[in-house]
Image 1 (cartoon, rainbow, N blue to C red):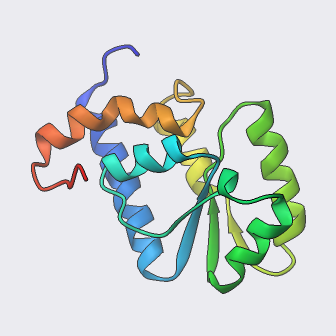
Image 2: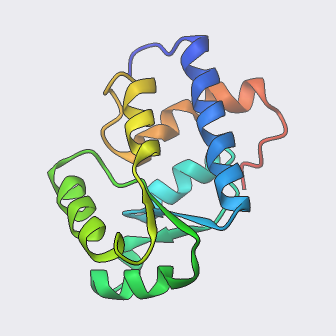
Image 3: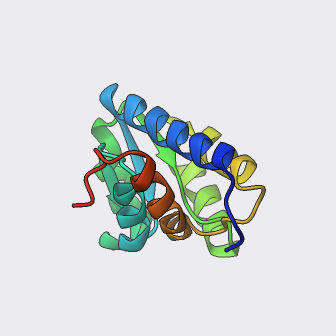
Length: 137
């Protein structure tokens, strides 16, 4: 990944702070896999994450999200991620608030360089160096 400027690091920190705030209000972040979850945790996200690949089938994931006040979809920006996003929107939107703002915001912040959520791990060092209180768990 090319060099990351300070403003971008600050925006990523703000992005994680906003996700943490959403999560304190009952939102659940939905990601595709364990590496996506690990990347968010490494950057300081402490809220509830549901991992799509831990469930057999989309309907089981939708059932698991039943108690969430809001579902934040943070699926990858590749063809599989776009397909899954559309399917989940169709399955959840009539029952629950589904938020795509964060997916769009991430694309804006990284100017499209981050295509998969796990790639956020590239920011780990920058963020932990400027914030020694982040739990690297």
